[in-house]
Image (cartoon, rainbow, N blue to C red; front, side, top):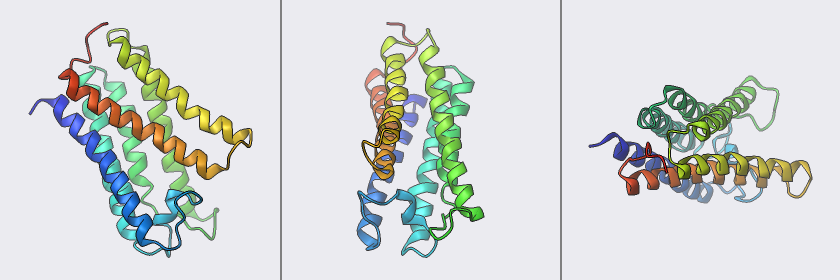
Length: 198
């Protein structure tokens, strides 16, 4: 199977697994409110089915997206992009460290937050690098620029107090996972010809 197809399937599987797990574990956890709570609450210490959420929703999804990132770097012939996007997946997988809702200062809570921040930083730097590669098609570079810009918008909205932090959290997730999904679909449609200059 060509590497672009494997990459696309990894991306779509990661996005699909996350969306499915979020729906399932949100339903199974009566303490979780889909619009008011952070996704991390599903895997927090003491929450029902937390271990399973952490294994599937964070761990498995993160590893699939790390593999996507690494192979995508090979497709666009840029090792740094592969490393940075893989860092996002590994950071996301590391958020399987369960947060302690009772103590933001607990070591596990700090490790959880650091993991997702490092992962998101890797994703942003990876997209910045992707947007700068003139050998790639304009559509690929434009998509990277748009996603990197959109991921900042929810944070600005939250800083301006237009909405609460959990909404920002959801919007950031939507942008990041949306980029993985659209990039995977584009790979399948283009036959992996992301190198073409357009």
